[in-house]
Length: 406
Image (cartoon, rainbow, N blue to C red; front, side, top):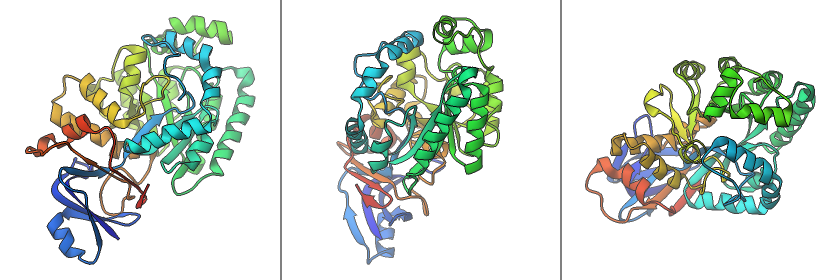
């Protein structure tokens, strides 16, 4: 057992839970926490590390939705409109994938560690990022993504998906977990959706899907019109969507670890269905701004939301603190300090909920995934601690995963 002592501790339990002059006892799990004087007296024989003035302890950040295979992008892709971006992805896809080899992706993962991320939900279309994720100290739920809407290709697509999932499963470990991703309602044939989800149910795998990311998607799924019509005509010789939004959502019954990404164009009925399914919404505010000029209406949500960076194909950073700052600024109608605390819950506890992991909270028997940071000066008002953590943290001082300092 070891003890960390800090000026502040943010537990990110059901409520944010802030303790001033705090100490935390841990091994591979959280053992105890509370007032420093009480904890140091109770565990007087333990090794103690004092993190110093203005230090903060909190759970490691959980990036619930990230794409790593396009990590080589900086200025190659076009932003401002979803269809413009999608066409630029198709034009530049092969070149970007070729640049983002395992060593390149490993460097991005190392930078994520230094900025406080201890767990990711990695959505992988081709498994080109598999080796880097397996070797990383970061906890990874590695989602094999099912994609493809052409009926005459569905058997081949399913065989490819199963082969990728089987390979991913061979790497299962205490910090690497296989998952199943369904790309989106417009891009996956219902047969492929159904069979992939049957595999997930059989093994209780985490499941994630993109849903209602753009106005173009909404128009295509509901009316077979808009920007996707020309896209599907030209590339797949399709003139009708393969499913309707609620039909798509109904496939996800009895999935225990479930998340839906974006949902910026979801209506009240669709959001209610997500709630009934027990899903968490992965909120990617920077990606939504760059691709759609919009944001998730948090006031409409009756479900928990986690925080994801999406990939560098639609973001300029994989730092969760960068993403949290952007979210804090984009949702300008929210009371600042209360919203900052909710964002930290989204980046910890609710991220763990989305991925189905025993993480994201500093509480007895949860995994000891912990970060520490140092604020630039004293804080007088406890209510502003979360706000200043988000505003001032670029790099963290310590990263502990499973009780091990990495």
